[in-house]
Image 1 (spheres, rainbow, N blue to C red):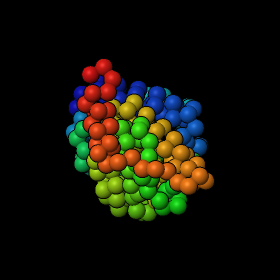
Image 2 (cartoon, one colour; image 1 turned 90 degrees about the horizontal axis):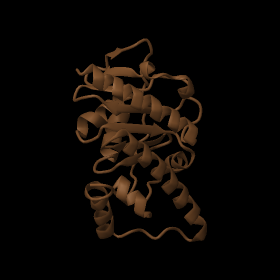
Image 3 (tube, rainbow, N blue to C red; image 1 turned 180 degrees about the vertical axis):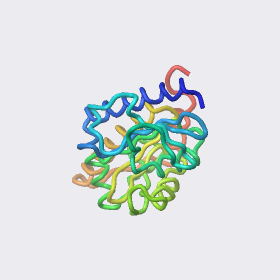
Image 4 (cartoon, rainbow, N blue to C red; image 1 turned 90 degrees about the vertical axis):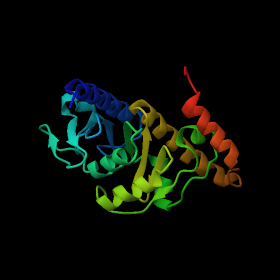
Amino acid sequence: MNRDKVKVAQIEVCETAKKMSSSGLVAGTWGNISARVDDEYMVITPSGMDYDRLFPEDMVLVNMKTFEYEGKLKPSVEVPVHAAVYLDRETVNGIVHTHSTYALTMATARKPIPPICDDQVQILGGDVRLADYTMPGSREMAASVVEALKDRGGALIANHGAITVGRTLPEAFTASQVLEKTALIYINTQSIGGPVEISRADVEFFHDFFMTKYGQK
């Protein structure tokens, strides 16, 4: 294991946690963030801690296969979920889990979000599926989330919240903001007859463009 990579991941996770707190995507100590170190280890936020008082060294190094960890603080109870996603998706290097208001509204209603916004389909890959309701931090939740995230950058978790992934942690954080905005837009459109969905062909075009051509590529 490369200790320099661990330090970089700890800094990135800590900074993202503070940004998530200030953005309003979480309330209190709910939600969690992680970054991949390599094929065996990840760094994740500690359990039940105020993000604004955390330092990079407080971020917990966890073995994704055994769940053993290093550090003075316990990792988030959602370790099994994060680990399962990394082990299933080798291109994912950052994960953000929130209990944000509008995403949780949709998750509580147990309603997926159809493809309705350009940025949604670009970043999230299409519709936002709903993972089954299971106990938080359980292997059952991990399996349900992995299934809901197939070929997607984000998913809802029934009665629990939302989870987004990215090739980088900043990309996963952006995805969480886009998912929250999309949930709000979907809810708002219900008062004016409901949204008009984007066609499958356009969804595929927009997502491919984002993944392969968007930005300074």
